[in-house]
Structures are given as structure tokens and as C-alpha cells.
Image (tube, helix red, strand yellow):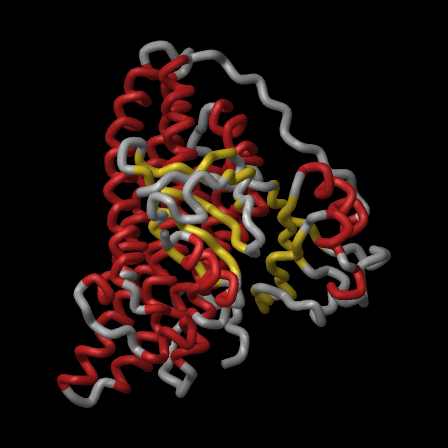
Length: 402
């Protein structure tokens, strides 16, 4: 299927034969990008980034409609209906994530106020994501990403390009940057400023924040950041559960959603508590919007994995779509006395000769711990979520067995 343009939201969408797999791949990639973009728009109070979110949200609406049309045409018997019902759930869930991201972007576009403490906390939770337009005289124009070699030299990645109304998601090494391309860049602060200037010819100025000290507000902000990270993890795990038809991973998605619900309850209490001490309680409106939308993303993750939880085999077209990624996510339960028991994990890197990144673990007495930016030692009984190649995942799973 070719690229879908940024269509008028009221335009008629007619049925046309398309590859359901290709549509699902685009929906998955678009949903993941939308989560990143929407939070970054809030972090930087960046209207241009927020506008890109709404462009992608409209694109997702078109993708959803075309996917539904194709799936309805494919259902010719009760067996077909049973097999395709979970696929419709996945389509609806991706659109739900898109809607939630759009609501987050509107915090910026509709000037729904947000406390500065939120923007101060998010840099600790995410890499910097910025939007830049390639200048005609940029040293990157008319060169491929392989030739530029940005990630190796600066740690900055081009996660998407928009060329007019055409989107290039997950651009590859042979993708060529053209003048006036809108590039979405993600990476560490130390690399972003130089890359942004080389791309656009303009200097990058990070936001300067003045954060008042309000205890309940700090707790609320810490909680929403944790909710965001858990919701993103839930989406990753949900797609992995579908790929491997793995009920245990699907169950972890449900566990994450339960924890996000509990966090939202505490979050709302702290926001209300902060209102008493805030100089202008109206600025807390944005936090409430953010909490509701974040919880909606975790709900969507459960819907993606619903068919697996109900023991309905993943439709082959869905597994093919999710399998587009070279990396996979795996769940390993660490047995006491196994090689992983007592293994140190530093910033997500396990002290073992295996190329897996540990992104989270669930510990019965402590709940979920996110390890991308933390140090921890694995223990017997830990449920570990790790990302890497299929070969490395198999080796990692063996290390968890006594």
C-alpha cells in the first residue's frame, strides 16, 4: 500500500483493495510515534509538534476506516468472523491510542494550562524529541541516513520524516533527506542541539523552567511520568503477546493496566491536594487531561492483547504485521539459583554476555520497576521484560532457568 496523504477529515473514504498487513504495520508505527510526539509537545510547549500529532491522528482515522473495510470484506463465514474479531479490536485500540495522543496535544494547542513541574519531570523520563525543517543549504540535504551516520556520531535518530503530506515512518539507512522535509529527531540533549542546527540552520533553545516546590504536585507529576512509562511498556508487550500468541505476556499487559488504574486514583488525589497550595489551581487542568489520556493508552493495550487472553489464535496477518520489527520483547521469570539470579543490571544492560536490554521487571513485593535509567540486581521470582533479537532472547530465557 502506498503512503496515505493527510486527508480532509470530512472527505469521503471509498473502499479500495489494500493489504491489511500493510495497514496494520502503519497503524502500529503511527500509534507508537504519536505517544512520543504528544508528550514531547507538552514538554516543550511546542505548537508545531502538537500540530504534527493532529496530522497523524487524522491519518490514523483514514487507516482505521480502510482496515475495517478490508476486514469486513474478508469475513465470509462464522469461522472468519471469529478469527478476525480480535483484529478489529487491534485496529480500534490503535485508533484509541491516536485519540488519546490527540487529546494530549490539545493541552498545548488549546492552551490548557499545565504546571511547570510537569515539564521539569519529563526530561528525566524521555529523550528529547524535536521537530525541524531541513534547510536547502543544510549539510544533510540530498544525503542518505547511512551516509550522514547521525546515530553513531551523535546518538540522535531520525524517527520520522514528513514530505508535504507524505509520511515516512521508521526511515531506513537508504532514506534520503530532501530540502523542506519535516524531520522528527530524538536523542540526548548533548546531541540534539548540534544536529538541529545542522539540519535547520537555526539554534536550538531548550525550555528554561521555574518550578515552585509543592509536595503534592511533585508526587502527582512523578506519578503521571510513571503512568506514561508503564502505558508505553503495556503497548509494547501487547503487540509482542499477539506476535507470539503468548498468554503470559498478555497477562502482564493486564497487570500493567491494573497498576496504571491504581496510580491514576492516587494521581487524582494528589492533584486535588496540590490545588489547595497552588497559586493558580487552573494550571492543574492540563495534568488532569494528561492523566485521563495516559490511562486510556493502557486500556488500549489490553484491547490489543484481548484475543490472546481469550485464547483466540492470533490471525496470521497480525503476526506478519507485528513481525516487521527486528527486535522482540520477551518475558522471563527468574528462577532462584539460575545464572540471572543475582545479576546486576546497569541502566538496562544486564551483566551477562547476551545482547538483551532489560526494560522492566515485576517484583511481587515492589510492583513494577522500570530499568532503562536505573540500576538493580535481579532476584529469584522476578518477572523480567527484556528487548533484543530473537537469538539473544532465547539465550536470555535459558539464563533464567536454574
